[in-house]
Image (cartoon, rainbow, N blue to C red):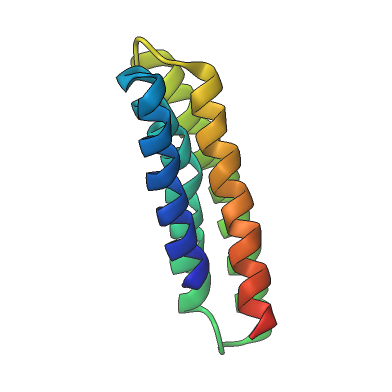
Amino acid sequence: MKSLRIQSLTALVLASLSYLAGPVAAYSSLFGSLAVYLPGLLFTVLVMRKLGSNSADFLRTAVLAEFGKLAFTGLLCAAVFIWVKPLAAGFFFLGMIGVLIANWVGLALTFQD
């Protein structure tokens, strides 16, 4: 859960800093962040429900949740690029990459404790 908090904070900081380039950059960054954050949140909810259960059930859920996370990320990216106009693509990808890196940092901090 620490990782999700770090991702949320990163998304807000990136959107706030992107606002210096304009409102389109800010919401583009926020949509990019959400395109990574929401599937990750769904993955976490699905996998955490199976934690401590039969290892075969847990593994099956983790594999399906990871596939679903990738598919959901693709759908969100497609939806943003189709329906959000105007969109600053560079800031969209900045938000995505920033939240991905925040996820890695959050996981590293989780396993460090």
